[in-house]
Length: 435
Ligand SMILES: Cc1cc2nc3c(=O)[nH]c(=O)nc-3n(C[C@H](O)[C@H](O)[C@H](O)COP(=O)(O)O)c2cc1C
Image (cartoon, rainbow, N blue to C red):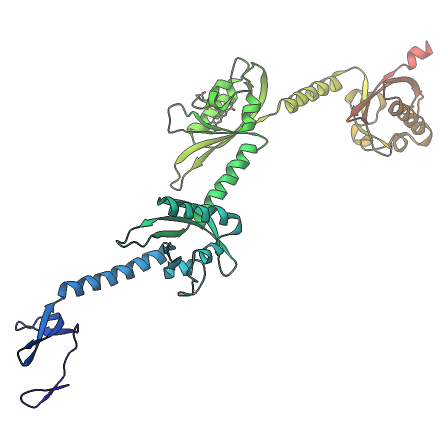
């Protein structure tokens, strides 16, 4: 306080004070006051300098607003910023980075080692070495690693940083850390699915209908094994290169119509391998659509079903023979405990014996013709199973109470080392025996 000439006490503002003055126009202007005392002969004079600091105040206000917006943006994008003073080993984290690792704002310990502690042990050495090397060589770095959060959970982050020059001799590095857990999760998912497709035990192919002639854009390992082609030899070609002279036109038309109508289709057709051999291919094709329902690709599954088709063909042939032969035929199932149950008989058997398929199927010989004759029949079957070869014998089996003689031939059907069935053929030789 000082005493003025009028004797009133005035408040003296210290040097460097900021005040707001109101101009004659009524504008409010922020000013900074500088004060200097000058000695003039025997008097000391105090000078006050008023400086308009509107621009500086505006800049500070903008800086504060920008910082606030940046903080919001960092939080919103799960990103944190760090600043490492390499000389003093002082590390500063933004609040958003502290939140990212699950600690309270203002509680980060503030050193490089403290930062390293948050990195997953499996990634720690590589991540810290990357940062330290970039600091040493004054270069930029970008790396990905896992962070162990305070609550025990784990996140994947992408970390980027570079040396920062703030004009003095202090060497600093600044960088950002972004939570990329979701992207990583998606990448892992894609890798898992691609791996599953690649290793699937059936051919998998993808075509791109947006390209001319719907060419192959992907084939898995099994498809290459199945066809004998390398992926590079067939990518870009339409799958019809697998067809040839022995390919029936019907399934090809079926596939063409389904593709034209963007519908799934499943069919079996003859295809050719690279070495010219033919196989039966069970092809299943389905359209893949995007979120708008547009077909982006077709996926095809290929399976070599040659064995199955050939077995079916053989069975069909056997069936024809079974039903058209002149002999009475029967098939017997052999169970593990050597019980013999008739599986089926043919029409000739039904006519000659008067026993229908419905009556005899599922029964043992004893159940059909009684203990004595049934027992004899079963002992022949046991003999056949033991010898594992075709046997032939004469037997008496009455028909309608009348004694008749049969020449019977029984053949074992061996599957995986076991006699699973017996096929029998009987011929009525009563008249011949009488002669
Ligand atoms: C994904 C996909 C996989 C296919 N896989 C086969 C295949 O393994 N063997 C085959 O003969 N045709 C396959 N085709 C069918 C042919 O590429 C073609 O569509 C078919 O021959 C009918 O068309 P086209 O009459 O123009 O030849 C596949 C088609 C697609 C879209």
